[in-house]
Structures are given as structure tokens and as C-alpha cells.
Image 1 (tube, rainbow, N blue to C red):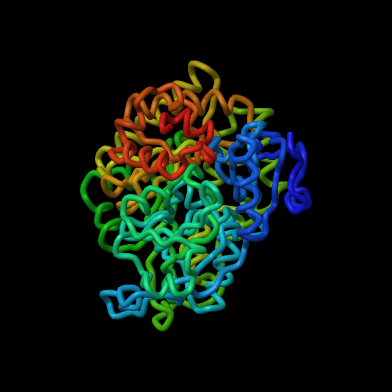
Image 2 (cartoon, helix red, strand yellow; image 1 turned 120 degrees about the horizontal axis):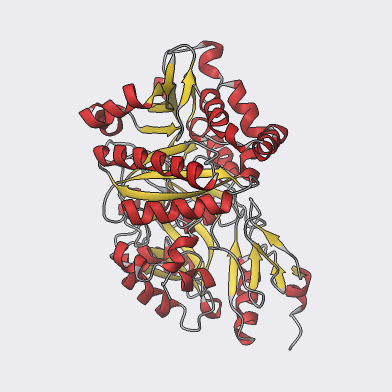
Length: 518
């Protein structure tokens, strides 16, 4: 085989083993590249195509699925060196310059594909700006979070793909294309005057809403343009409640619906799938942590002050960020797995926080660096239906009881629930309407993890028709023929667009094939 171009040899690594964050996905591609410019990406694509190779790119490896996994012969890119960001003001159309409905000025930021959300948040903060939403974790790159449909929470807040106003992709042959919706933010005449033939502008809904959640199969993301907001505060209240006597009745009587859809901007909760004995109440209870968060303009900071308002629960911080603590939990459960219910109770109590007021990204960050190495999950979406949610939670708790009784397998973490706005992205599970997401995290290194996750996926899909998150563990779906076609009404259009943009199959992945999206 012809040798690599000198520049590609300089930025390449031979037989470098790649692991995702939790090390449940491992691959050793023949060549791994670390590009630091669009010219490098173009060279990599052109060289791969000349040799009949496919091309894959990865961000932080935070996904638990095989979405970013390269095959042995694929050219593999790590994008961390592409981490610049700044205000985007070039070639904006009158539509792009127009103020929002509430009279606020619109703000746009361009970010390269390899920047981590954590770093983007810091850069935005220095500009007096902030993302409107984010997932519970900020270690992902923006391109990785986008490509897998990261959603965050908030039924009136945009998910990650719906904050993007433009996406620059380097595709087959090294062609650079700037994609926007049909009524995009860019003035075509001004854009052509600035870039000429070097970058192609496509303002087309079908193309944009296909590539914006493309699973890495449409080309290599180079840059993204986000619409963001001025810096804002969030006031959070996180309380511990009982499922049977407090939260469940609120879901059934309509009170919880008002919390989610009228009173708060972000609402989520976590449920212990097991009941434990409460000495105080002298009975068995199923504890939950209920988080309610409300946005405030920067000029209208909530009046609460003092140490309590400025700090989160310090026990929760230690548990989420000190690696020794999570290692001790894993070791303890491997010695005595029946301790899982009490361990989950402790984790739920550590997340309680009567009051916290902080900048948006500090409140929306709900996880910890230590859990990045040990936490893994399957997550499923459902149409928003609060009584149905009760059935799902009660059913899941019964399922975990059966796993324990019949197989000696324990769920080792709580069940988080979030509510997400409708999306325009064709492969978003939220395309058909707002959704509620029910997550089933567990600890990667605890014995029996793989078995209970498989049983849970089969149960949720078959019993409740749950639709899995692209970035989470979803092995069971590989066995479900036509599942994607039945649950994603725009999947055929997405497939058509993918084949049109990638006629050589340069960016096709084994994951896309397994999911039935070839």
C-alpha cells in the first residue's frame, strides 16, 4: 500500500488502542490521526478514499454505545486539537440579525468540533453568554454531544441539536459544506463574497435536519454555529421525597404536570428502584430526589444569598468527583451486591440540596468526573404521559425485583427521569413530539452489569416500547429488525440523504449498519 503523505505521517499514530470513557468499547484502528486544521481533515479523507478506507471521528468517547467505534481498517480521527470558539457575526442575513420574540438580541457563537462543552461554557461565560441547555455532564466534545442527540432536560428548552443554527462538514472528496435550514441565518451573497468556491453553502431543511444528528455518518464535523443567550442564573431546589406517598400521587393527579410545563424551566427526578426500611418512618419507602430549576435573567438574580445558596451539597461533590470514593463503592458492591439498595439510597441523599443559586452551566452540570469512568447506562424515550410514567417506573422496579430474585442481579444505581422538548432533527427520538426520558445507569465494573443491562433493555423495549438513546448502551436493538424504521418516521429520508452525501460509503460505520440505517 502507498505510504502516507508526510503531513499525515506526522499527525498519525500506528496501532493505537482507543477506549471510550467507561472502557466498554475498545478498538485498535491501524491509523489514528490528530488533525489541527481543516486542511488536515481534507488530506485524511482524500487519502482514505484513494485506498478504499472508511473514516471515523471521535470526541471525548463519552458515549457508551458503539457509535464512534472504528473498524481495524478505518482511518480514525481524534478531534481535540480543533478547539477554538468565538462570536459568529459574519455574513448574517436580516433574518439572523433580527431580535427574538421577547425583544432580546440574538447571539451566535462558532465552535470547532473538538472543543469540550466544559471549555465552551467557560469561553461563553467570558463573553457574557451561555448555552440554553446541556446534558448532565460537560466532558463531551460539542460534535460528539451533537452527533448522538444529547438532550439535557426541560420541556421548553432546546436539546443540543436544536441549539445549532449551522454546521460545517467536510465530506467526500474533502468538499467543505456549510449547512443551514432553508430560512438560515446566513446571507448567501455575503457568504459567497467571503468564501467564494472554497466552502459550499446549503440552506435546505432536509439536508440540515439530516446532518445535524448524523451519527458521524455524513462526513466529519469541523465547526458548529450555536444560538446562545446572555448569561443567566438558575435557582435549584433538590428535595428527597417518597415515591408512593408523594411523587407518584403528584404524577397521577396533574400536579407534577404543572411543575414540568408551567412553573419550572428544568424538572427531573431520580428513583431508587428498591424499597428500603426507614427507621424514622418505621416502614419501607422508595426514596426519590426531585430537582426543580428556574431561570432568572442576569440582572434579576434571586434574592437568596449566603453559603447555602452559593454551594452545592459537598457530599455529592465528593462522591461525584473523587475517584477513590466511586472505586470504594464498586469494590464494596462486588463483595456484597445485596448492598446495592442502601448504596443507591446514600447516593440519592447525597444529591439533596435545599437551595443552590448559580450560573446556568454550574447548575445544569449534575454529574462528576469520577462517575465518567464508572457510570454506564441505557436510556429510553417515551411520549409525555405522566400516568404512563408511573406504570414505567413501577414496572421497572418490579423488573429489578425479579432480576434480583431469579438471577441474583442488582441494579446498582437510581433511575433518572427527564423531560425534553420536541426536536426537528430527523433522527431525534423527540422528532414526533416532547418526550420523557427514563435512564437506567449502573456501575460498569460491578459483576453482572452486562447481564442486567441486557435484561433491562429487552424489558423496556418489549413491555413499554421504549426508544433508546443513540449514545447509550443499546445492544438489544441490533437484534430488532425494522425497529428504527418503525420508530423514526424520517429515517428513510435520513438514509436517502446519507447515501446522497456519501456515495462512496467513506463515513459509513458498523454502528449505522447494525442499526438498520445503511
